[in-house]
Image (cartoon, rainbow, N blue to C red; front, side, top):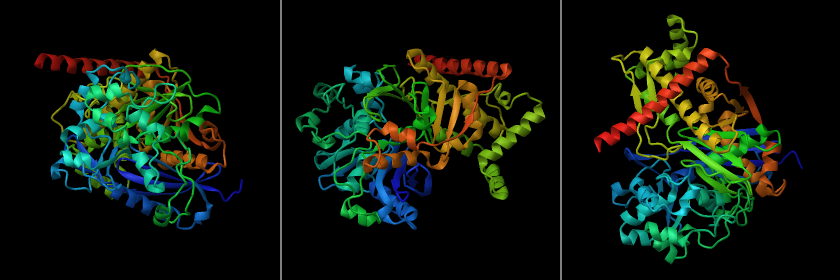
Length: 552
């Protein structure tokens, strides 16, 4: 293979777009990032614009291609959040925005974090249909079928009848790139209640009829892709880059485009192969941590776990079974705790003055507090303050979007000391919930002892240490923290190019690159401290449920 071969990855996260070019060894060549807009008129409503996202992708690609010939790009891969894109029959954006009476077509995406469909998810779950066995027995309002049901119930009839396509965002991106509407097995199976080969025969008509979406059955599932071939990750989409997309992106017409993945799975693609040393990955858990966190594990046989999505067959690796857990708010929760504290303005001013990021300053302040209080471990600063982290509901392992966050031990304190300690307690709470997820998975048959991290929270060294100490798992960080997920997307382009094995696992092992490793501490006092705090975490969860029962 020529050393001039490059692959382009494009990643659409919650708040930004990234584009990256890698070489044939998986080495990052160049990376760019552009912000994207989110419309957030109410606490549970989050909307985005397909037009804005595609424009941001264009700017990103133009940046990374500035000094590279388009002829050197041999394949393109996409990943994105699992957000619902609504298009009209001409493929143009169609509004999902109730605040504009569905007239503002700019806002045509219901973001994954949008919880407008909580009631619809409950309606679906109350059927106890066997299809729900493949989402941990409980569908989430973050998935596309509850959101589709919400649209069916709330859109004016003429507006609903004008819908031409309902797409998960990753599939929308390959459609924009190629003009081809073939959907990915990842998006359909994980978010649209599709039962792939080896599990079922696509959509279950009885299930959709039972939940109130008989319209989809009667129209032969046309809005969801109909009877088109469903593509596994990295399989070539259509005839590659369309003339229109090629001109917009500054690339060659016909450049192979790989079938897309949900962003969490792209993070797993970039990390699991290298961490496995080419062997199986049964003991590995990929954690993709940003605004939220997703946890992905793989087994050769299906394992059904209540509250854990899946098992999903072939959604990333062919003929393998994938489990997906998650925390709906992690980076978002950290930012909320920090930015809403009275001392945040002082922290921000200090950050500007010293040109140091706020999280490094908070860790520095915590070290000062530890020395002042003469504590053996910084963690002990939170002995009497406890956080339960489900401020935006629970995705895993409880699958309860109605749960809410809790803080116990609040003082009348507006100081920087108080901010730093609340920040530390929040990091610990995220780690305790991660342990809760891992424990449930291991009790069901997994043997997880290594966490393969990607996403923006990898830069938070304090969180990574706490995760390792709490879970007692080894943590493997990616070589390129800023680019780990988008590099996974580029691997899809490598597969689509035909220059490598058609087995994605082989590409993951060959091109995957890892960075540093964090080993868990073995200090008995610290271990006991976290074990005790973990018991408090469970007690807080139990108390919240008890309070709700009392108020019924």
